[in-house]
Length: 74
Ligand SMILES: [Zn+2]
Ligand SMILES: [Zn+2]
Image (cartoon, rainbow, N blue to C red; front, top):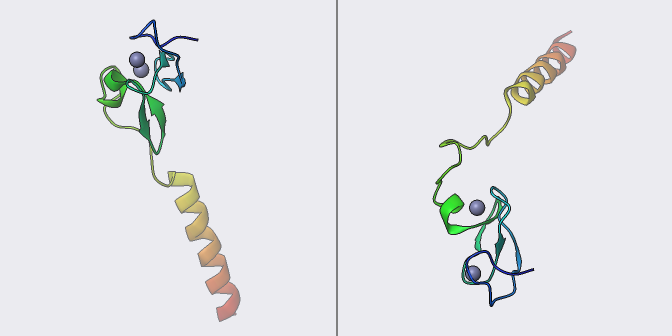
């Protein structure tokens, strides 16, 4: 496995977005995973990544809280 940018270097991992093999000089490590420089800069990815708590988890949390409060009141 060789780096996509440096054919003479061994690749450490793949870009999570475009899947290109990357060496130490090219790999960009983020909390979300490994990316090439272009993808880390947001090149061809959607501008806004889906993150945070999904709406259904919030709705479920509110429902559970409501049921707990109601159980204590009655
Ligand atoms: Zn990439
Ligand atoms: Zn490289």
